[in-house]
Structure formats: structure tokens, C-alpha cells
Length: 450
Image 1 (cartoon, rainbow, N blue to C red):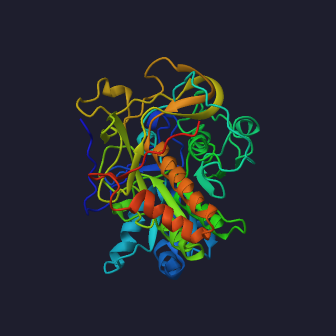
Image 2: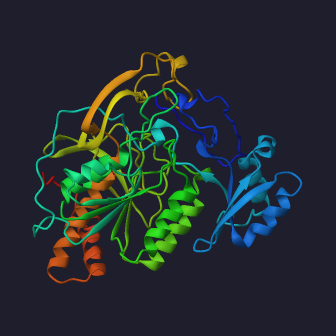
Image 3: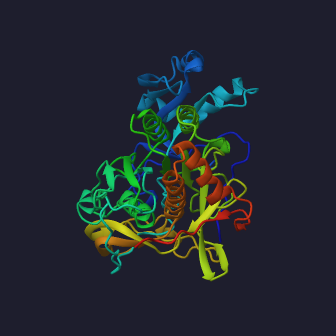
């Protein structure tokens, strides 16, 4: 049976898990899980608006020492590093609750935890673990060949990086940015998000081979990405002289009181101010809930859910996919095939929540459903640069590719980039006669080029 999470308007409760065997055994010590509100955050960090910094400092004085601070003037925010010993007695959610008691009339949060996109497997934006496959993509034409779908459009990915060997071979110069390699945990298991960026890049390239893809690594070596890192990377993209047209964010998580991620919210505003034509796309998440998942639930972002096809005319929501009023589009997300890492060895176990039945052997799982390290033999898998994977992470880049393809068509007839992108979004997502599914938005189903 699906687990519901209480996120009503009640005092925050914090359950700091010090045991590193929690959350499948790869839970980093600097991540905390807020149980009743069900979100994750950096244990000793606080994000504060610059106009309210003085009030926050007064609250912390004599209780919690500020060890370091980082400021981003573009966002009007500071990231405060708090003393780890002090926050054991004064956890960040409790401090935030005290601050917001003084801001009772404020609509917009002024101080928040630095939310984490993960680390639960179900919040990693994967509907499953990657699985090996014998599938190999067909050969791509040279990038210089005219007329390829997506030509003239650049798609940026906020992700784990990409396998540079793929670009030297199958990608053929289409992908650039930050590299990634297999990352393992302390048990020698491949982490759940390893290869994620390479896979997402492959989805875009398969469906829009004329597009350029730029991968910005926002995940650290523990497979973790936080609000501050994602936000500042998005702001950096908006500042680049060689602009991108589409940004795909196959990341997301739940937020304190469902009020969004403060840093990403500011970064989205900054990016849209600097580049009004910029198209932002995000995965809706994989916990079968209608609870808003951010940044997909931000209405300046196209939130994408997953569907699967049962017959030529019949589609249904993928069993893992989130859904709701805040979802704008949906695309296939079950058993997607794409590029992956070259890896042979054990992987972090993943077991989906079963919709109809209670978990069996609950002692082998933590409270978020992740398999514990001693739950059985390590699963040994062999990947040869391809995989099949399910999740809203892989539906989102399908929508990105569809918009890139449509925008490229407008560019070829001389439309300026801003007009081409607006037409593309309108035709792919907003066009009134497009098929829509309840709580899943517009159905988008581009066909692969190879």
C-alpha cells in the first residue's frame, strides 16, 4: 500500500538519522531527513534572504555559530554554514519554525533549509534502477549534415555530467560540458544516479540529433544535489554569453510545507528576467503522489510526468509517476533505452513501492523504502554503454527534444529564437487540440530519430 506523508500545517518534527545504514546504506552524514514533513536537507545549512539576514543573526546569536557564509547577489540570498555541534541541539527545521513564527504574516519564506533533491531512491527521480540491455542505437549522421531535427537549438541539462567516451563515439560532438564516471558507495556499489546525465543526454540526442547538448554537473560525488547548487548553476546558465534555449532539470524533491525551494525559485525568476525566452523543463517525480514536487511544480517550469502506452490509442499514468494539477505534460517513461556508462559490478539495490500490497520483509528496508546493505547479495550487473531505465527523469528530456525539434523548424524559416521557442512551446504543450490526460497534462510522444 502506498505510504502517505503528513505535511499539514503543524510544528516541524525532525528525525536526525545518524546511522549511515539508513536510506540503503549510502546516506551521507551531512543529509538529514525531516520525517513528518517528509523532505531532505543539508544538515548544517540555512538559506536566508539578504534583507532578513540581521534578524536571522539575532536569533542564532549565542545558540548556533555561523562558520561560513556564501552570498549570491543575483538571487539576493546567503547560504549560511552552521556549526555542526550546535545544530545537534538546534536542528535547522526548528530554527526555521522559530523564524517563521515571527513572520506569521509573510507569504514568502525568508529563511529555509537548503533542501536536497534526494537521497531517497524514490526522490532520485528514477522509477527504477538502470538495467543492462543488448540494445544499441543506430548510427547518427555527421553533425554537420543539414536538416537534422533540433538543429540550431542548444539544450542544457542540470544533471550528473556525461560520459565523454560517448561523445568521442556515438554522440559525435553533440554533447559537451562536465564529465562523469561510475561513482560507487562505501560498499563498492554503483550509486543510484550514476550514469543519469549520460542517459538523459542520450534521450535528447536520439530524438533531436541536430541539437547541441550541454551538461552541467550539479550532483556531488555522493549523488546529492541541493537547492543552492542547482539554483546558482541555473543562474550561471542565464549569464552565459553563448546562450542555451532549453534547460532540462531531471531533478526534484518535496519542500518544507510545500512552499517550494527558495533558491531555485529565485534562480528561475532571475533566468526568466535575463532570458525571457528560456524554456525550463523538470521531471515531476516518482512517488505516485499529487503532492507538488519542485521545481516541476513552479508554474514558470514545464512539469513532466510519465505515461506508458497500452495500445495505439490507450495511455495510462506510469505506476511510479507523480501527478496533479501542477503537471503540464507527460511523455513515455517506462523502459526507456539510452546511453549509459561502461560498468561491471554491484549496484545499490532498488525496490519499488508496491501500489497494492504492503512491503514484505520490512526489516530489510528503511522508512523510505530503500533496501539496506545487508538485505541480500549484492546485485552484479554489466553495462556496455547502454541501459534501459524508467522514471520521470527520462520523460522530461523527451519533451525537451520535442520542443527543440519544433523550434528548429521555425528557425529554418527565419523566425528569431524567441519567437521560435514560443511557437514550439505553444504547439507541443499548450495547443488546445493536443491530447491531454487527467492530472498529467499534454501527451508528448516524439519518435526517435535512431
